Image 1 (cartoon, one colour):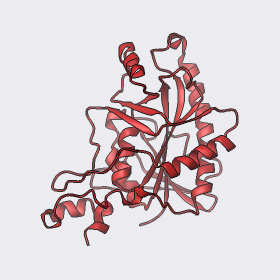
Image 2 (image 1 turned 90 degrees about the vertical axis):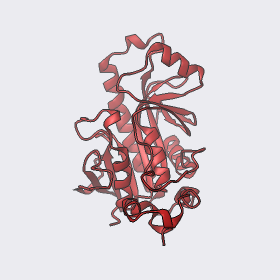
Image 3 (image 1 turned 45 degrees about the horizontal axis):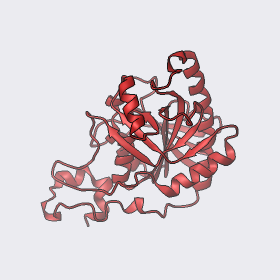
Length: 290
């Protein structure tokens, strides 16, 4: 079923690239339900890319309602090997300004109501997640950002704090997160990163700063109009950046350890894995079940 080796998850503005050609929509059913929306497949140059609007088109899904497992499993069924994720974030540090691009290399989980693994129900696995972002992919993203997106400050490294939402933080929470050394705050990317690792796909986050979180003394002066303007401008920057990244990686198969994340992670004895579990996770564990 391989249709695309590169996947992009983000808002609706990401997949509306003027240079995208031969666009089609593909509906995929997974053992974990339906993804957030139909996948949008299109060509960037000669490269077929799978796009998925994280919250669904028109943004009907709050973060807790996003079917993360279906989204990542759907990418796997399409043959995706690398996922580039773009999302709006709030800044927890003075030096990370609105309109900056942050490429976090760590995540901190403050969610409470989400499934974050494909495993369970008859099969156990424990992936390594000390370094949750693919360094090789992030290297390309950083280099592309610094050379193709003019007038934007790029920060490599830092921690993305993922909260449950949909409400934003209280000031007390925001100050605590700052005291912990967190860099940016969002509501979506932790589950994507963890599930992508289980699915043996490279993953990197492009965090687009729209405003300072509520700790900042000027936070209350930020208007909805300002945030929307930043979102629109960030979307244009993300399109340019993602297009450049895809051009650079299209002809280079991944050679990192992400593609072997499950090699020693499945601990359930093969003869104890029931056929239903094998079938449910076939796209992920199939190569280890022969």
